[in-house]
Length: 300
Image 1 (cartoon, helix red, strand yellow):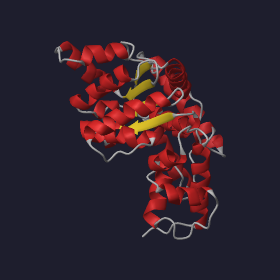
Image 2 (cartoon, helix red, strand yellow; image 1 turned 30 degrees about the vertical axis):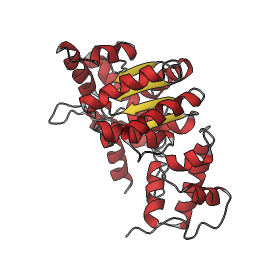
Image 3 (spheres, rainbow, N blue to C red; image 1 turned 90 degrees about the vertical axis):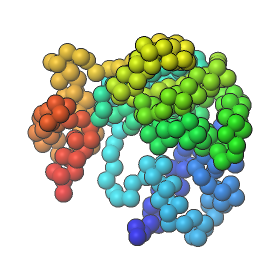
């Protein structure tokens, strides 16, 4: 059993206070968003002695959602080309209540950017579609993310999501790993877009499987998908070049930018980058996850 230290709990409370400033809903809805009993959250917020207020597993779950590390190792976030591209897209969609799709390679920092933006932008909500592939789970995951009751009747939860999003100032919902959604779950996005038009922004993120899935359904004439695609700007955004030499340069800069803010001794940086740029057995260039693993091995 992992022991939750006092410092970890304090770090979780600090992170919770930071994200509260970017949520304009009530304390009750904010507590629901993080699976906390509102009365417990009130006591935590007011600085009451937190001993016994949450179980060890609840502290761990909350820390995981807030990206609070159990150890001292911290992966610093770099403003890479990927990050700034997603940030520009997200800020546009939020400001003008529009919708876009970003599709690109794995391991380039898409999820890191999405989660960080949801922690720092007001009323920006993160939904992990890989954890909620079916229509039912997807709808309830959105409800949980924005801070409303997610366990009621399916139709009532959908109605509440549409209503609540329209009450918030400039909300934005980011759907990460959207290519994992089942077709019926995808079409729920069209319904939500129609219900919140000009009141809420939407942003889908995925790898090439998302592009393949949408194109396949459009080309096969599956009802609803052409209309859905048109609502999401009828295009797929990306940043990684297709040309091999340009792609290698892109990855070299990406890895350099990230490693530069995560290494104290930068003498081994070229070696780590070269290891990442070697293609694996699948022909895939190593990205940021491989870089982090190599960096950890080099510091053990």
